Length: 361
Image: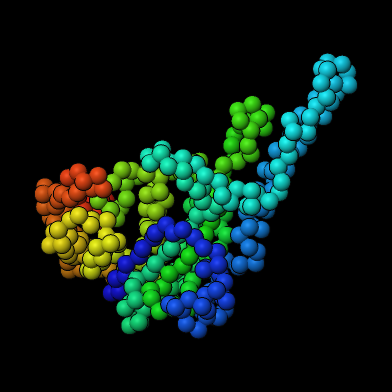
């Protein structure tokens, strides 16, 4: 039984890093950079600038048409004597079609930090499959990884229809774990008409915020299924939780079992529980790995074509073992310092409880 971890992280996003062969050939961590090692799962036929400008063009045209209509109406009122002042061009500005350049350096104030931050032109995710050793020892093959990433994209497009994929690239020219860079532009349409929008500050009849787009697609804030419960529910977690569950389904269909973010090695600068004592962190992760392994063993037995009574009993015992460990953890929550140096309690891996109930029904 092959058990493999999956990581889904939000990145800054770099078009040149993801697609530029010449650029990648100069990087220290790459080798044999070619079209055979930089695989475009979504054809990269146009730059992100061209793609984003094409996506925004209909909304810009709609806004400009409405502005010209208002200007023409003003001229009609002037010519008929209803107003005495000629309409001025500056009162009816048109928007250029190069949306990308115009908004590349837009900023907004972060309400939490009260600092000005750049608004992202597009969003980027890094989907990781397994680790370096899984790739080197053949636990995951290149063919398996590419198939899983392709299936993941199919489900991503279905689950997030307002996310317009700009690029999806797998870098085989790196010696680390199999991973895909997924870049997308969130766009949702507003229900209001242009007249209402014009009266309330103008703009386009669409929005590009990640949270707003997720909300328009019906997602609600969730707690992460791979992090501790002291985290505040956010919309990004709803998005990532959905992607994790999709990855698990796809991997099961391809003979692999997912391990939710569990790792046996602590990286102090990256680990969310940086303020947790190493012994406590290691004990928590060891128990989590054991519980997830027991669940995967149970799934393996229950999905067999012929499940005899012995296998059912064995699988049930595994689940009972996980259940008892969950109860133990629930009754003895851990604690650590959060980013504000406040001691908070947390429980480990919410999704385990849900999966146990699903498997036992």
